[in-house]
Image 1: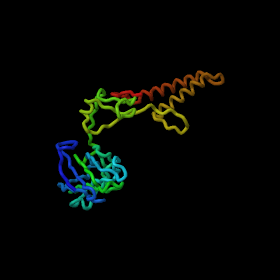
Image 2: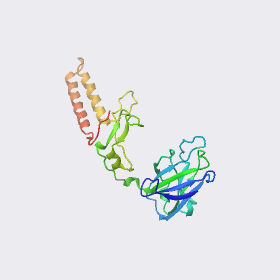
Image 3: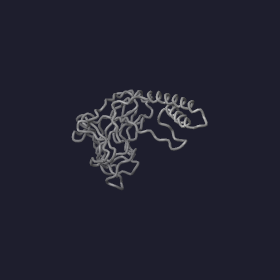
Image 4: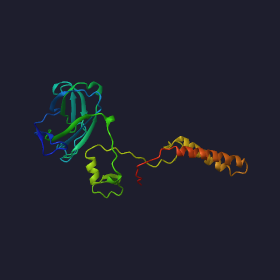
Length: 264
């Protein structure tokens, strides 16, 4: 195996780590590389993030993807990742496609003195003798709760409701050129909602506050009763008005939505 830094294929900075695995000569279920680092305390971090790409194929299909766990990231408090504190499975990869990965640390409280990291070739799906090239770029530890989110202007994105973008399906999020430039390879958080589910059975769970549902349903029941001749109609009308007011109070207390886009 040959290890180098290449400036020909990378995602950030000026280059990426390139691992060339010779056909038939790469270790099966072994560590491909390790790197010594200055001791770092990761006990207050919860994710590892990085870019990775592989040209590897499975033994049965030259265009197949590698499966989750074929490659692993190791974090260790011993030299050469000999006794890893963390063994993190790299997600499923598509051949020749860069993937941005976020792997949650399993036991960050024990990761107090990490001095080496490794890339392990576990080969859970029968990759061809390990031959191929692996690229690894921009690996870092992050604190998930410290992320600072900035709103992406509404004129920089749209929902492709008809699937008009080549290679996209309906309801895909499509960014404009400016939107892609602003987002870069940063994480995108989608916040949205839908129309509340209509009641179809006694077991249906309400998606709106129970206070409003109870008040409005009581008002409708009292209003229906006010048309009967065998009861106090004036009293039922008064009761219906009381509960309609309660329903209005509950509706007015719902949060007011701002800076949203309605999509149908």
